[in-house]
Image (cartoon, rainbow, N blue to C red):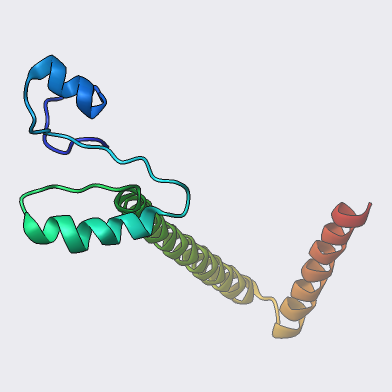
Length: 146
Protein backbone atom coordinates (compact mmCIF):
# COMPACT_ATOMS: atom_id res chain seq x y z
CA UNK A 1 0.00 0.00 0.00
CA UNK A 2 2.96 2.29 -0.51
CA UNK A 3 3.69 3.32 -4.09
CA UNK A 4 0.92 2.25 -6.51
CA UNK A 5 3.03 1.95 -9.66
CA UNK A 6 6.30 0.25 -8.87
CA UNK A 7 8.00 -3.05 -9.49
CA UNK A 8 6.72 -6.12 -7.72
CA UNK A 9 9.61 -6.12 -5.25
CA UNK A 10 11.13 -2.83 -4.17
CA UNK A 11 12.47 -1.14 -1.07
CA UNK A 12 11.50 2.27 0.31
CA UNK A 13 14.13 4.06 2.37
CA UNK A 14 13.19 7.21 4.24
CA UNK A 15 15.96 9.69 5.07
CA UNK A 16 15.94 13.10 6.69
CA UNK A 17 16.10 15.92 4.16
CA UNK A 18 19.66 17.00 5.00
CA UNK A 19 21.06 13.49 4.81
CA UNK A 20 19.32 12.88 1.46
CA UNK A 21 20.80 16.04 -0.05
CA UNK A 22 24.34 15.28 1.23
CA UNK A 23 24.22 11.67 0.03
CA UNK A 24 22.73 12.28 -3.42
CA UNK A 25 23.42 15.93 -4.16
CA UNK A 26 19.83 16.12 -5.41
CA UNK A 27 17.63 18.75 -3.82
CA UNK A 28 14.46 17.50 -5.51
CA UNK A 29 12.82 14.72 -3.55
CA UNK A 30 10.80 12.03 -5.25
CA UNK A 31 9.05 11.02 -2.09
CA UNK A 32 8.24 12.99 1.04
CA UNK A 33 6.65 11.79 4.25
CA UNK A 34 4.97 13.81 6.95
CA UNK A 35 4.50 12.42 10.44
CA UNK A 36 1.36 13.93 11.97
CA UNK A 37 0.16 13.80 15.53
CA UNK A 38 -3.02 11.89 16.29
CA UNK A 39 -6.12 13.78 15.20
CA UNK A 40 -4.25 16.18 12.89
CA UNK A 41 -4.60 14.03 9.76
CA UNK A 42 -7.59 15.92 8.37
CA UNK A 43 -6.05 19.35 8.96
CA UNK A 44 -2.79 18.40 7.24
CA UNK A 45 -4.66 16.86 4.30
CA UNK A 46 -6.76 20.02 3.91
CA UNK A 47 -3.59 22.16 4.03
CA UNK A 48 -1.89 20.04 1.37
CA UNK A 49 -5.00 20.03 -0.83
CA UNK A 50 -5.51 23.81 -0.56
CA UNK A 51 -1.90 25.01 -0.76
CA UNK A 52 0.49 22.48 -2.30
CA UNK A 53 -1.76 20.70 -4.80
CA UNK A 54 -3.17 24.05 -5.93
CA UNK A 55 0.31 25.04 -7.16
CA UNK A 56 1.32 21.66 -8.62
CA UNK A 57 -1.30 19.08 -9.53
CA UNK A 58 1.35 16.58 -10.72
CA UNK A 59 2.12 15.60 -7.13
CA UNK A 60 0.57 12.36 -5.89
CA UNK A 61 -0.55 12.59 -2.27
CA UNK A 62 -1.49 9.54 -0.23
CA UNK A 63 -2.51 9.91 3.37
CA UNK A 64 -3.65 7.62 6.13
CA UNK A 65 -7.17 8.88 5.46
CA UNK A 66 -6.90 7.78 1.81
CA UNK A 67 -5.65 4.37 2.88
CA UNK A 68 -8.50 4.01 5.39
CA UNK A 69 -11.02 4.98 2.71
CA UNK A 70 -9.44 2.52 0.27
CA UNK A 71 -9.56 -0.21 2.89
CA UNK A 72 -13.24 0.54 3.60
CA UNK A 73 -14.03 0.20 -0.12
CA UNK A 74 -12.08 -3.07 -0.16
CA UNK A 75 -14.01 -4.40 2.86
CA UNK A 76 -17.36 -3.23 1.48
CA UNK A 77 -16.72 -5.28 -1.69
CA UNK A 78 -16.34 -8.40 0.46
CA UNK A 79 -19.52 -7.53 2.36
CA UNK A 80 -21.36 -7.09 -0.93
CA UNK A 81 -20.06 -10.40 -2.36
CA UNK A 82 -20.76 -12.21 0.93
CA UNK A 83 -24.29 -10.80 1.10
CA UNK A 84 -24.91 -11.87 -2.48
CA UNK A 85 -23.74 -15.42 -1.68
CA UNK A 86 -25.94 -15.51 1.45
CA UNK A 87 -28.97 -14.45 -0.60
CA UNK A 88 -28.27 -17.13 -3.23
CA UNK A 89 -27.78 -19.85 -0.59
CA UNK A 90 -30.94 -18.78 1.25
CA UNK A 91 -32.89 -18.89 -2.03
CA UNK A 92 -31.55 -22.38 -2.78
CA UNK A 93 -32.48 -23.54 0.75
CA UNK A 94 -36.02 -22.15 0.51
CA UNK A 95 -36.52 -23.68 -2.94
CA UNK A 96 -35.21 -27.02 -1.63
CA UNK A 97 -37.67 -26.88 1.29
CA UNK A 98 -40.64 -26.20 -1.01
CA UNK A 99 -39.50 -28.85 -3.48
CA UNK A 100 -39.16 -31.47 -0.73
CA UNK A 101 -42.53 -30.54 0.77
CA UNK A 102 -44.29 -30.62 -2.61
CA UNK A 103 -42.71 -33.97 -3.48
CA UNK A 104 -43.75 -35.55 -0.18
CA UNK A 105 -47.32 -34.18 -0.51
CA UNK A 106 -47.64 -35.54 -4.04
CA UNK A 107 -46.26 -38.97 -3.10
CA UNK A 108 -48.54 -39.10 -0.03
CA UNK A 109 -51.55 -38.21 -2.21
CA UNK A 110 -50.68 -41.05 -4.57
CA UNK A 111 -50.26 -43.44 -1.61
CA UNK A 112 -53.64 -42.46 -0.16
CA UNK A 113 -55.29 -42.74 -3.59
CA UNK A 114 -53.86 -46.25 -3.92
CA UNK A 115 -55.21 -47.19 -0.47
CA UNK A 116 -58.63 -45.84 -1.47
CA UNK A 117 -58.53 -47.87 -4.69
CA UNK A 118 -57.64 -50.97 -2.64
CA UNK A 119 -60.85 -50.53 -0.66
CA UNK A 120 -60.22 -48.21 2.31
CA UNK A 121 -62.98 -45.74 3.01
CA UNK A 122 -62.43 -42.02 3.57
CA UNK A 123 -63.24 -42.52 7.26
CA UNK A 124 -60.60 -45.26 7.62
CA UNK A 125 -58.02 -43.10 5.83
CA UNK A 126 -58.72 -40.12 8.10
CA UNK A 127 -58.47 -42.35 11.22
CA UNK A 128 -55.15 -43.72 9.95
CA UNK A 129 -53.82 -40.20 9.31
CA UNK A 130 -54.86 -39.05 12.80
CA UNK A 131 -53.20 -42.10 14.37
CA UNK A 132 -50.00 -41.57 12.38
CA UNK A 133 -49.95 -37.88 13.31
CA UNK A 134 -50.38 -38.64 17.00
CA UNK A 135 -47.63 -41.29 16.91
CA UNK A 136 -45.24 -38.84 15.24
CA UNK A 137 -46.19 -36.09 17.72
CA UNK A 138 -45.68 -38.45 20.69
CA UNK A 139 -42.31 -39.61 19.33
CA UNK A 140 -41.24 -36.02 18.80
CA UNK A 141 -42.20 -35.03 22.36
CA UNK A 142 -40.48 -38.10 23.79
CA UNK A 143 -37.28 -37.36 21.90
CA UNK A 144 -37.38 -33.74 23.00
CA UNK A 145 -38.22 -34.19 26.72
CA UNK A 146 -37.29 -37.78 27.60
